[in-house]
Image 1 (cartoon, rainbow, N blue to C red):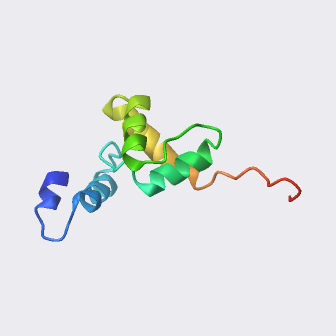
Image 2 (cartoon, helix red, strand yellow):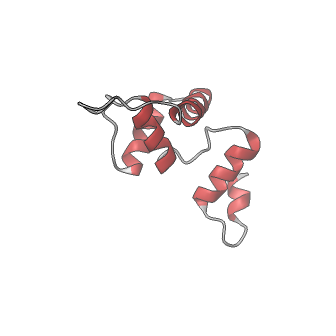
Length: 94
């Protein structure tokens, strides 16, 4: 589906992957170096040493979830749960 969507003029790889993930519910095809994944992963695991570079992050993400079902689960969990993660309080403020 991602490849077919990219054949439409004006649809690039990021948009095609996001649309395919949303339509099929298969987040193993989501662009894993995307800012949303990186942001929510940092909020969900604030002490984890996560790469800043999108490509390095995507490579690490793939190592943590080496097969398609794991990649789907890690990505959907991070996107769905990460938005609800609370940041630790800043010293001196509640």
